[in-house]
Image 1 (cartoon, one colour):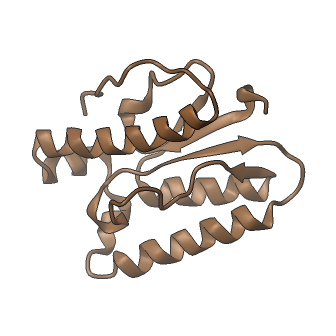
Image 2 (cartoon, one colour):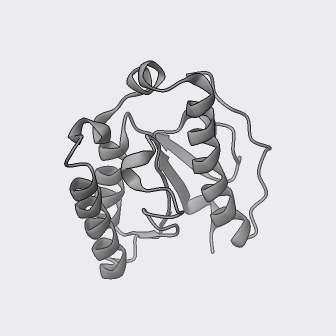
Length: 147
């Protein structure tokens, strides 16, 4: 696998210094993350991490990060089906509070206490670290971003 083709799409600013081997693309909110991933899959990328990874329910955390392999070898239908199902699942779980999917960093800072925000960032970071570790990638230690 070519590590230079890996990309993390995330709304979690604390991932900024995660690994020099992986491109990190920041998006404003969860819906941006999910739709950007879907768009990349249409261009030939393949999911490396699952968009619903972890035991944290999508409507309970304001952060989502997803690892892709930009392989450009045609449309990977399994990845496309997975991201489409994840978007649908988010929409269902966030029906009581649809604005959850479009919370920006400023919104998250306003709505959640600082410690809870850092905890959410940390959980998201650990899920990504686990995916990268399974691929043999080394990365910098966790450094929380000031949001």
